[in-house]
Amino acid sequence: MKSKIKTLNELLTSKQISALELTNKYIENINVLNPKLNAFITRTNEIAIKTANKVDKKIASGESISLLSGIPMCIKDNISTKNIKTTCASKILGDYSPIYDAFAVESLYDEDAVILGKANLDEFGMGSTCENSYYGATLNPFDIGKVAGGSSGGVASAVSSNMSVFGLGTDTGGSIRQPASFCGCVGLKPTYGSVSRFGAIAYCSSFDQIGPITSSVYDAAIVLDAISKKDKRDSTSIGLDYLSTKTINNDIKGKKIGIPSAFFNGLTQNIDSKIKTALKEFEEMGATIVEINLDILESVLPVYYILACAEASSNLARYDGIRYGHRANVYSDIDELITKTRDEGFGSEVKKRIMLGNYVLSSGYYDAYYKKAQILRNKIINEFDKAFENVDAIITPTVASTAFKSGDLTKSSVDMYLTDIYTVPINIASLPAISIPCGYDDDNMPIGMQIIGNRFCENTILNLAYKYEDKNSDKIYKEPSFWRE
Ligand code: GLN
Image (tube, rainbow, N blue to C red; front, side, top):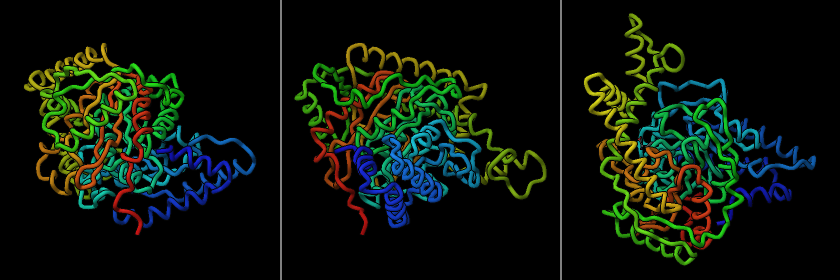
């Protein structure tokens, strides 16, 4: 698949299309498709048109433009945008507009990317289906009876259905990679520290990362290059000191790819065979496939859900109805103001996690849960470190299934948590990973393959993903069945 961003950039710079025409085309796509897919919470047509006009002026005056200039895109609605509503798909932030932009958003404004709007998500990023949204569920363009995945389901659905060329998501335990996998997109979760979290509304601060969802591997590299600079407003920001687009087409001969067999148990036949076929392709290109032992699956979900809920309970304490967001109408004192506001403002999944987080942090249970989870987190990190002494990358399925039917997982939180088993270890160990389509199941639903790299080695996984995509693009990219009528 040729880079969509590069193709559009060529059309813009050769004046075959103006930035305004391109933007209007995407606005029209959203007008037609969004009522059915519900990928957008807020639309920003005026800002989009203003940026498009600015880009057209630059082109007309002969000024050179960057690859992202004039490219229509969307932003997950838990990433702060100055003077644009940023709801986190929650009632509690229903009319909240930040007074500053996230670092990643600033970076995209610097490039004159065209912001079409804010995309739907599971409330505060908590979920795996994009159904836990105060603004209704986002649907999957490959089958509108199925979920888009979550929590960045709005971005994935928008990119998959061509309502957006690319989008920014956040990934705390799989929220970029899992919806990308369900909607047939590419999703990149950067190393913890590669992209500044300044302006990313915190869910679990030690796992959260911002990253791109795109329709090709090259596009993911272009966006990553634009947003991965060091930022002093996030003390964990390190940035990347290279451009991934420079090395993306390097020969992958001699690269060693590790396969943890435990990650391949209990997959449906289709997913197993599609990934095994992909591994053969890597071998044909000169990479070596080796079995590795990654003995972590038993502990990853408890560790993730204990730590994520603990941090969430603390991060979400700020929504008290006093400083910003929703405030209960009727209350008799300050305690009632806070409790009523939180009761009315948060959805049930968020409340569940706040309670779980408070429980594992409470004095009698701190050692038994929170501390133990931190010890196990270190063990998981060590397991990955050992594996990366011998391999350049690790390949697993992104999810053990393709997109499930809407409503299937809303009944049981535990079933929903189980779907995250292959994605959460990456956040626990602060690693980068990319999900790339590798085929389709019998129902024509996309299957995602996850390529995991060592810390700050985004260039390695983008290179592997690009080479695989280059050889297989006609097999792995299909237009969603749900298309413009
Ligand atoms: N599904 C996971 C959760 O509910 C991951 C979400 C995310 O990455 N934001 O926490």
